[in-house]
Length: 115
Length: 113
Image 1 (tube, rainbow over the protein chains, first blue to last red):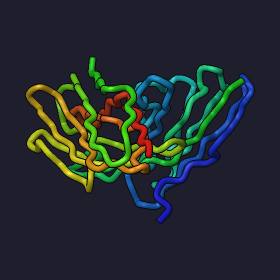
Image 2 (image 1 turned 180 degrees about the horizontal axis):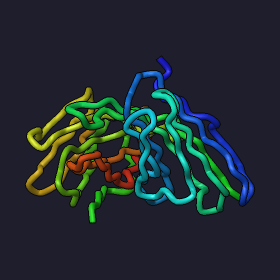
Image 3 (image 1 turned 180 degrees about the vertical axis):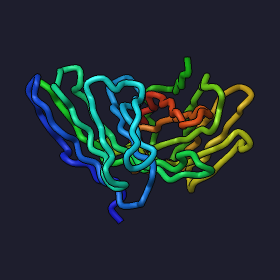
Image 4 (image 1 turned 45 degrees about the vertical axis):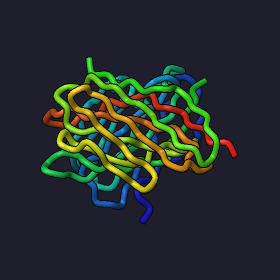
């Protein structure tokens, strides 16, 4: 059972380039989310999805897009990379308990550097 | 503003010793509190989750406590092992329609032989 798989593990982009961070889960979880982790700060929510076809913004959504065409996949797109987007990105999925996300499983992260 | 503060920022202890990590929060309305372990270069892994009515939860050598009145939690690690070297993150959930998690910045624990 793979859990949450993120690709790539490392990426270097030039300012202005675009790219997609991939996230896939095989646990049939309805809820998926993207976080970024920066030094000295707690994880911050970028976007989340409560099910296929439904996405919403989190705390720091600017510069990122998401889509959820299937239950399994939740890609994160950087539209025009900026140095401020240098970070470690984590995808998480969770099952629901009493209609709310409960147990979170995190991927191993993508370390992105924008130069 | 919802906040989660952890102390100490870093801690070094000898293998076999016990230690306690602290978490203070101002998240409201409170739903639950989680402790995660994050190894270097990996994603966080859940250790415990406690709701308002629970004041202690154990997972092997890890024991978490919660005082909802004072809005404090602690994570106690017994008989530490080298594999316990990691960051430990306290996460508090607010009870909104779509759950909102507030993450602490973590305590970096290093176990030395």
